[in-house]
Image (tube, rainbow, N blue to C red; front, side, top):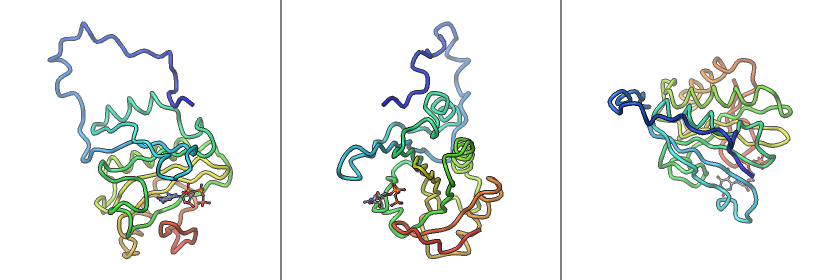
Length: 191
Ligand code: MGP
């Protein structure tokens, strides 16, 4: 299944634009980020994960955003993940194994999935938290009940994690949000 939104869309012709004009127009992000895709068609869970591309500027993220399908256009069982480059979106990665996730659950496949995904990605890549170093990445699981989760490096400090949860809640509005250890469905705390 293609993940490209409009296959007929062609890139603008920049051949006549002098290169000097384009120099320095991109706005660098604090970190490089990898965009991953999960499609559930292989037996071993991790074999379904593909690192599609990486980006490190605002403009490159927006190009990707306009090029790719939104989460609500994906098939059931698929995931998108945006993680700091070098961190794999799996519990076993060194950056995740002592961590947990702030989980936003959707009662059913809702219209606001796409903008909540977009806003959450922008909060992360724009380094909008006091404790940005604790952020590993974000996942959207496209399921009958969709989920968006922000993965945190260290689950052992509730006070610090609460700052991240409160910021997410304030930015995203009226969403249910709880903190869980990886491989658990139990909320340790909620905001
Ligand atoms: P899921 O895809 O995160 O959620 O995990 P889903 O499909 O809503 O299912 P539920 O169990 O949360 O209701 C589904 C399954 O994929 C997990 O039970 C694991 O078997 C496997 N899995 C998911 N993740 C994120 C990992 C991971 O990081 N490492 C490994 N080894 N397996 C994982």
